[in-house]
Image (tube, rainbow, N blue to C red; front, top):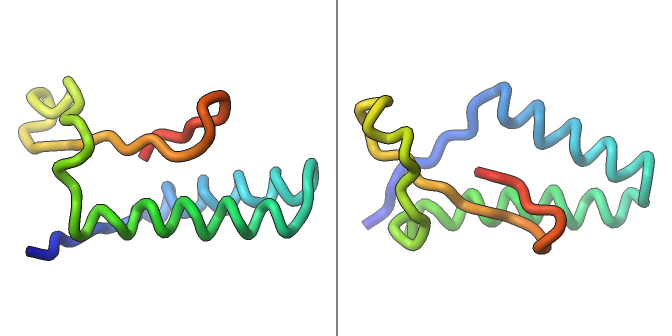
Length: 79
């Protein structure tokens, strides 16, 4: 079963800003690798969302929200 995954405009802008930061303080190659990696991780939620834990805020929001962590241990990003 495939699930619908949406990236909100603000979230995509945040992803883009992080990639720009990596480009300026690292390299364009590192930024592209990170950018492609996080988009691949997000896309993987279409087929495997239940591998991620449900966040506590789900009850307050009235819908199931799951948390995906992306990146190395010291540089994790919440999706």
